[in-house]
View 1 (spheres, rainbow over the protein chains, first blue to last red):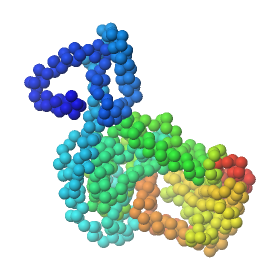
View 2 (tube, helix red, strand yellow):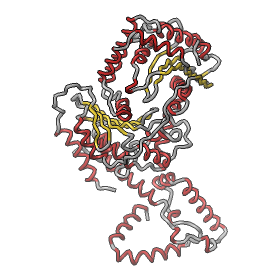
View 3 (tube, rainbow over the protein chains, first blue to last red):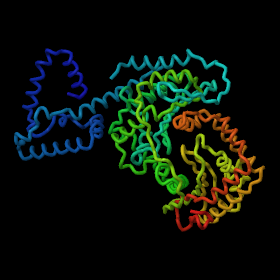
View 4 (cartoon, helix red, strand yellow):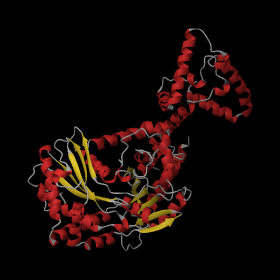
Amino acid sequence: MSAVGARAFHRFLDTKPSLKKVFLPLAEKYKNLAGYRQKGLLTDDLISEENDVVQKALKRLPPKVAYDRVYRLRRAMQLSLTHQILPPSEQIKPEQDIPYLRPYIEEIEDEIAERTKLEMLTKA
Amino acid sequence: MFARTAISRNTTRCLRSANSRGLASAAIQNPWHYETSDSQGVKVATRDDGGPTANLAIVVKAGSRYEPAPGLAHALANFAFKNTTTRSALRLQRESELLGSFLSSSVSRENVVLRAKFMRQDLPYFLEAFADVLKNTKYQYYESIEEVLPAINAQIKQYTTNSAQQALEAAHVAAFHRGLGEGQFAVIKKYISHSSVADYAKQAYNKSNIAIVGSGLQHGEVAKWTGEFFKDLSAGPALTSPATKYFGGEQRIEKDAPASFVIGFPGSAAGTQFKPEFKVLAHLLGGKPQVKWNQGASFISKAIAPLEGVNAEANHLSYSDAGLLYVTVGGPESQLGKAGSAVVEAIKAAGSATPEQVKAAINQAKFDVLAKAEDKSLGLEDVGQSVIHNGKAPQYNDAVKALEGVSQKTVQEAVKKLLDGKASIGAIGDLKVLPFGSEMGLNV
């Protein structure tokens, strides 16, 4: 799902508390089963970076956050090559899995949307 | 995100209001007289010439002499009009374009100045935007990397290719050491980060450091909207800088670039202590021809006339607590040694200027003052600085009267004081050809 689609779906869920109550535990379960936390990755590490928006967002990360991201990716690559997972103490816990990249992506999407709107503006 | 209708509603309202209100019709007594007042703790000075366009400046007493670390004032000036919590930088740009206006910011040794030029009926929009810049700028990490540092680097590049400007900076170092002597540009960038600039902004952008200066605007309107938009700006303590002391000396910098040097002398501070004879003396020394394709009749013009390609010009800078009368000399390297001695001889000769020559210099200084008073965008910084420091706006007619009071005797005394005191010399370029003060016959 694209980042835009994911945001729309999140917003839709926010309007339906009962549906959210069903989806949220399921989502947590899925995240644990997907296995990336066992390889030391955060959910935001999985966002596809082959597009301009995410490239720009990556450039805007503070240096320490960007360094940590590269470290996690390399560690996960190494684990994948050697068919291993991290010892349980080093695996990512749900409370550590914070969206460090999504706020930047959303901000850039907002900027693009604002620019498009201002560019279509006509004198009334 | 916000709805498209919200943008277009606001902007079209701005555009509509342009047609509904006409120009100020109040009879204008003296179009260049500044009126000052205090609006919710913010100092406001305005004048109204009744014209259709207006200039607004926010003068902030936060120039390079007040910065806690090198470069912060320059960075703060470049962080103006960036993203705030209420509107993005892009939106401010586009809205000001729609209103047909110009926004700019600058830094000097004394002040950081935010400026806007616009049509007079758009005043509330710009005062609101300025208040927003002062109160709500986000100072984001990535904006400093993407926008602010590249802009600073471009300005530094321009500065480092201008020998005359660098020589003047060097003369300031020799003359004042710390405070006014420190560089006004962020040549050293290691202290600049989004958080250090945000900290400096918090210290600088408060009611005791700012003055709002308007030209072509009704005083009541400016005071009213200032009260409205700036009332919740923090009161905060004023920034301070140690009192300036004049040292004098020589600062020589070796550089593979066109050679240039500046000879500086202690001048006159602005404000109540202003000594008009220094301004007259700068015009008496001159150097810049008044008529094109002509050598000019001023002392320096005559002295450098035989030296082909040499240019030299005297100027006077007034700061809040000190001044610098200086001559910038540049030209072919083979001539610079002779040019230095010729300029010093010209300064000595100015000590015996005839009353007619003094009269001509006074007229030039008067023209300078009046032309500056007439222009809507020049001089706003001086007015703001004066209002911040002593609560009074400098009036052009007082300045003219002071200049008219200068006599041959006061000029002679000023020249004697210059030559008896220590000079400040800034030189940059090939040090082999650049003259030392003692070679030119100066005390350093």
